[in-house]
Length: 446
Image 1: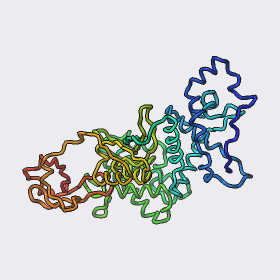
Image 2 (image 1 turned 30 degrees about the vertical axis):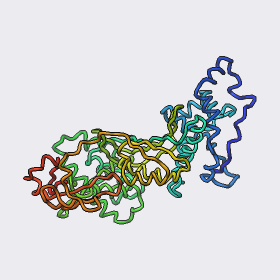
Image 3 (image 1 turned 135 degrees about the horizontal axis):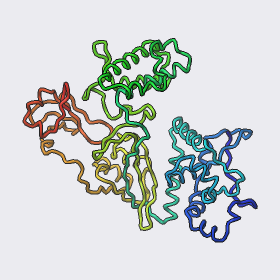
Image 4 (image 1 turned 45 degrees about the vertical axis):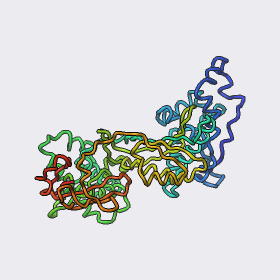
């Protein structure tokens, strides 16, 4: 598909807005569409998206990039689906006016236009590590801030949880789904010879029969069967399907959720190694991660928003989207690195989770004054102050009772926490056990 800029933006004799009555025109001029059409849409830079398309002019031309971007912005403003945007553009003159399509005989968006545009942007980012949509939106934010006379010298930053649209699965359901998806792939690709005894997995009713129509007494037997089938698939497939997504997800799930002990595969128990929040939550969105914040569970992602604020309002000037295990402190470091040195001194207001000596120093180097707000946070037991740390302050050397930890580490994700694990027998009879709020697992105490 070839690229060309959007030249069909002038009014024509058949323009749908030309037939409006004076009353209707007045209502349109006072609607959100007028501001969007006059200020936001013209500021969208189409040229940055030229790299997504072919240079062959004989090919079919693209749906105008500024219309796709404008439609995506409106979609987020009104929290509607792609289908709603496409339908509204066909039937509502406000949407046509906002996107400068009132002169089109046929509206340019179809049911696949936005998804294909997003995919092109995603593929380009995966290949070249350049997020064209992010660059476009932040550029728009800067232009809008100037129009609103909002100075970038005063900014604030905060993060939010983005819930993934996935079902919460039990560990057995997750393992079953991984096995089932790979079996279905093998069946559809003509490898039925590998599936002896596993044909039931590609029956659409098998999931319900396995989990919802069985009583709880049969759960252990079902799980054992699933793990046995998974091991069988690993054996018969070898390395022949290493490039297949369904096989990769099955291998990942087994490595995260199970261990092989005495030649028998079983589920990992709580506290065993490498069981953390980065584990896959659902096959439908394998990148979604788990996080518990303010007593609530989240499965999905985290968004970090940087906005310029002033008397005339606030405008988002930068954002970042990551797995929800990403720390606020790391979000800040990424933002400082991405935006570079500020020619004009500015103030950035954040909550306490972003603050730290290293972050403050890095902000000063970028000509930014970091101002943390006062937050209470989680109450920390007084006894934690009696733990002895190494000189760098990133490892526990000894607990208040004098025990040396089995292991201690400070993850590189920037959350500032130090983790230490002690032998179970050391903590069970310790007088400080309740104060330390330990969680006793089978073999050790984190």
